Length: 375
Image 1 (tube, helix red, strand yellow):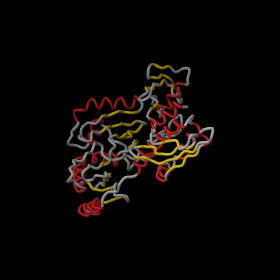
Image 2: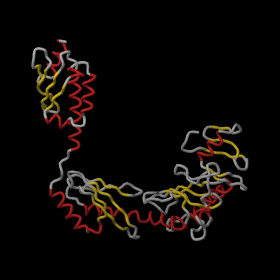
Image 3: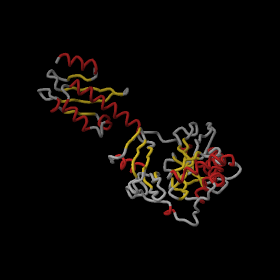
Image 4: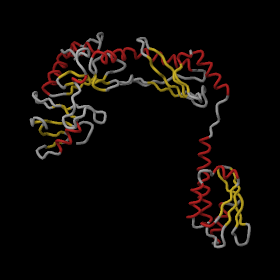
């Protein structure tokens, strides 16, 4: 007992007993360089679960929301020393959270200078501003008339501190910033970036307008990939380089072997015909010796065949990308559906990430190579 009292005096020298029975303690508890007044009333048996804690109004205000924690610790602490240590820990956390919640608002000139900047830029460029003037959205058009947005998140020390800028670009966008910079300079750099990406968006827009794009269903301006329908349950997935959009993209054919193998052969044979001066879509037509199914003639439902196992077109964002190689069948499947189906058959066999089995529809041999998943 005496050892506990000595330890309490050493660690909390400002909290002292007020009577011989040591049932009343009064003084101060220190946290983050501040002292807080408190008084503790203990019963005759000195059991903390029946004690009372009286706090100054400052301490009570800071511990507001932590009363249940303090009460719980008082019920379970074996002695006063343990309780005071835990009370100090709770107080430290409460003070830290209060400090994080309370942020001084910017000075009046912060708002007046921002309004002046927006006025100089043009109010027609402003799409959104929050009540704190910490998030601003501006718009701009590229040379082809497409509208783009930039979200500017201002920091407390703006303009001394560079703001964060969020754009829907296929490449990274960083703003060159000095303490003399403003929204005008951000918008100017945004326009320059739009101009540098114009050719990329022209290429992607032509693909979206003149072909049936299976994925992504609603492409964003940052999307560099397109999966284009070719017919016969076959498609081509292309990955376009935003900096060199008319160069040969990465190509991956999806579909039955008897349909996509000839396309791969043509691509290899005609690759020398690729002309960066022509549009990417025209080059694909020339190299593959095909005409893409036209949007004006066919409906998307002509290509959107459901999976032959789950009977759905989309499954967790994925569409059927596996096709039976039998020309009389050609049934499409989701990769995961076909994997689960084949894995459940005793006649299937597996070698690493390749499963050999039979088509659920025509029973002809079928090979599934898993990608992005350990089979």
